[in-house]
Length: 519
Image: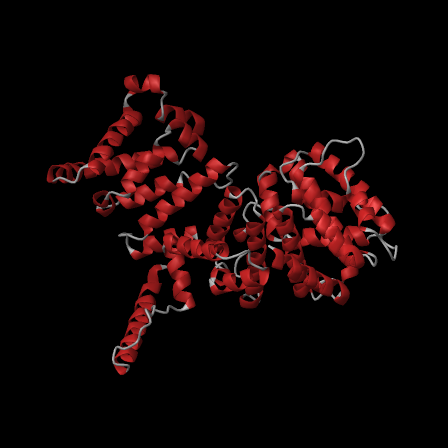
């Protein structure tokens, strides 16, 4: 029945002239909005005000039609709907008139795709939320209506304004009093200090403020030389973002910005590391502030399997090291089922699963260590998990080829694992390209370098030749930085998990210091 109604309300372009109706009204108002937006003369303002009742009725009819469709159908029927709604959002006469705001917001909500499947739908969601935030900042509806709407979107009620204003006034009075006592001789440009709760409320109500905080964090991370994870952790905690992200609405917006940063940089190691550290800080704060979760995990990760999130959230430190292979196997099996089984598309494609796993990337590092410590045949579950982690875009066949290649290298390395003395050339040969095969893809080479570095840290004979092997590996600045990142991330993870490996830890610190001094 809904399909029949959609076609009746939205005739094709050829039928529009004959049937008139909403489609022709749409074209008329598009032209009007363009004229109103380009001129600010008295005549234009008078024309705008004259048409406000009719335009409000048009918005109401638009909403009645849009609510019957999904977002993709809306865009298909009205390719310029974003232009019409954007022009409307920035017209103060329309926003101030009667119930136009309410109908405009309802129309915008129809554009939000609850399960975005591609980058275009993700961008449309982000664009729509920015417009919603702009309208909410100038809301003129009664307080009850605002509360109902903002609650459904996850925003805080507007009653934080008095507290925010009081905090600002007290801060100003304090500064003025101090300046007066100092004879106005102070040379510092002091800033008003807001409480954490006020900042969280501000971010909930004013998206540009949250975006600015995220941009400031990214600027800190990129403006200086390559940062170690401890320094990244300090930046993240100082930003207050992990604490604010305990509110699902802020977590979702921050996570969306991380997603775009990951896509724009094509999975840059710095962004991956930042997402992992942020997630660690966020989970710690969540556990500290919420003895019992105020919100379900589904509100933080709406497109993920709840059972998978629960397993990923397990803190390895609370599990005996000898049993780490069990949650790893469970994680791998659930991820593989979601990624390769067509019946689980409700959780998104491979990218969504990989993006979720990136948040808890420490599990991938543990998997690499476990492969070198496991007796007998390398478990397929761990091989698959690493292959997927390093190259999520691969199909199942290509991923299987990577698993075969990695398994072959592991077999050669395991033969050398117990030998007390080794040569760098032996290790290089063991990790080298297989005879007569095609050159390895970059992601496969990176994965094998990770396994070889783990071998150097854990094998008894690896310590003596570690510097020589790394010198053979680090032939480019890119690989050198990759090795530095691996060592830094390994030490950071060992510290968090309280891994007792004094000899390996000492070697990793020395290698990290030496390599960092060279770049």
